[in-house]
Length: 441
Ligand code: CMX
Image (tube, rainbow, N blue to C red; front, side, top):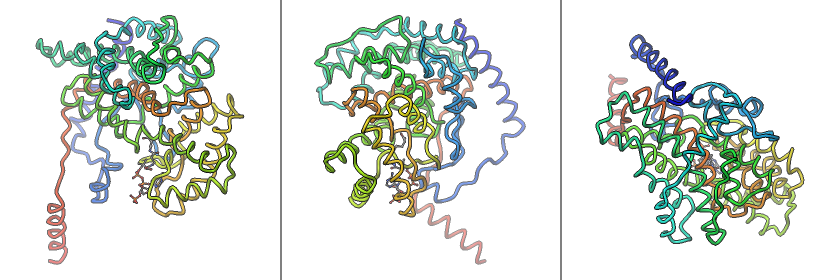
C-alpha cells in the first residue's frame, strides 16, 4: 500500500469509528430547522450532508481542512523558484487533513505521472465529436470514455467486499486526476490549435505540465495555473458540481461516472460556466464602449443596461457567501503582484468598485460581491489564453481534486444512497390548512 493510501486508511478508519460512536450517542439530536422558503428556494443552508475536505463560512469564505486560502499560499509546498502552492499539496491536505512535506508532494507528483497514461480510444472518441461541440461537453464525454478502466466497477462486478470500496475508489481517484490534464489539453489543442498536440513533460508538476500541454510555456502562466487549480478545487459539499458528484456517487456509480456528472453541473452559467460568461461580458463592454479604459460611469451604465435586459451580472453574487470571495481576492493579489498594468485586469478592479452598490440597490441580491469567476478571465487573456469557451474546463480539472477526495471519504465512512424527501404544492397547501385548523381550534 502506498504511503498516502496507508495514511488515508488509518485516518478514515479512526474517523469512521468516531462517527459510529457520535451517532450512537447523539444520532437523534436536531441540527437544523427547515422553512418553506428553503424548500422552494433551492435548499439553501439546510444542513444535510457530510463533506470532509472543506467548510465554507458565509463571511470568511472557504477553509480547506481549517486552512484559509492565504494560509495555503503560505504553507503548501511550491514548485522550485515558484511562489504559488502546488495543487498536489492541496489534494494531500484534503484527503488526509495534514499539510504535506515537499517530499510527500514530490512523491504525489511522480505517482500521478506514472498513472497519467490515457487510453488511445479516449482521443479517438473525442475526435468523432463536431469541433464546435462545447469544450465542457467534450471534456465530460472524455471522462466518461475512460469509465471502462474503472477499478471500482471491475472489482464490484467480481464481488468486492464493501469494506474495500474506499480502496478501489482511491485507485480510480488517483488515476482519473492524473489523466485529466492530458484529456483537457487534448481538447484545447484539438479545437484551437489545429489538433497539434503537445506531449506531457514527465519531469513537471501536475499544474505546470497542464500549462505545458496547453502550449502555455510562460512561467507567469504556470504559476497562475498552480494558484487557479488550487483555489477552484473545492467549496464544501452543497455546491452544484460537488453535490452532483456526491449524489451520483451515492448510488455506487464509480468516480468516472460521478465526476462526469459533476462536470455537467459545472457547465451551467450560474455555476462554473460563469468564468466564460464574465470575460465574454467584459469584452462586449469594451467593444460597445469603444475603449479599453472605461470610466466608472461608463461601467455603471453598462451594468445597468445588463440588469435592465433581464440578465445577471456574471461573476457577482453567491448562494452562500456574503463577502468578497477570498478566491477572487487571491487572484486580485496575484494580479497586483504580477500584472498590474493589464487594461483588462484594471477593468475587473473597476467593476469591483462599481457593481456591489448597484446590486445592493436592487434590494433583493443577498450577496453583491464578486465570486471566484469574476477575475480569472482577465488573467487568462493577459497570458494569451483568449479562448474563453475553454475556461470552465480548467475549473473542472481543479474541481476533481475536491470532489474525488470527498468521494474517497464517502466510501470510507460508508455514506449511504442519498434520498431526500420532496413534496408537491398540493402537499404544502394541505400542510398549511392543517396547521391553520390547529391554530383556530
Ligand atoms: N446579477 C443580477 N441579479 C442577481 C445577481 C447578479 N449577479 N445575483 C443574484 N441576483 C438576483 C437573483 O437572480 C434573484 O433574482 P430574482 O429574485 O428576480 O430571481 C435575486 O437576486 C436573489 O438571488 P440571491 O438569493 O442573491 O442569489 P442565489 O443564491 O439565488 O443565486 C447565484 C446565486 C450565484 C446563482 C447568483 O448570484 C447569480 O446568478 N450570479 C451570477 C452568475 C455567477 O456569477 N455564478 C457563479 C457563482 C460561483 C460559481 O459557482 O462558480
